Image (cartoon, rainbow, N blue to C red; front, side, top):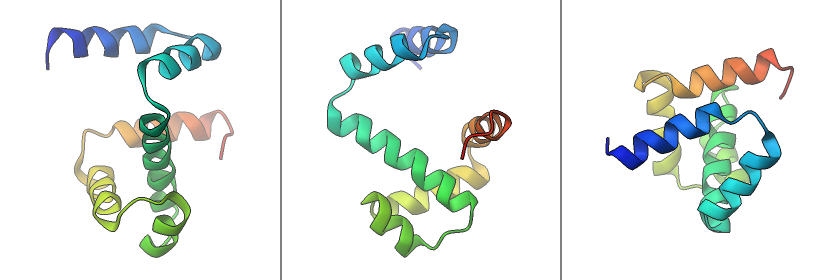
Length: 94
């Protein structure tokens, strides 16, 4: 990991204001990149609920290969998806 990536991760983890985070992400990412991130998150949530790939593809527009990678990361990755899903459920979000 390079210095800028490490700094970015640290800064993102320190921000507790959703509006500031929203503004930063809209400045940092193109609309397409932000949508891609959102769709990957949606796919992870749908996979955790055992939705079929075809439904996830239709809902998110992601390819089956991308969905398969997300599924693999859910099972064998760094557990980042799981940590955020647990946080989301703890907040009562769907």
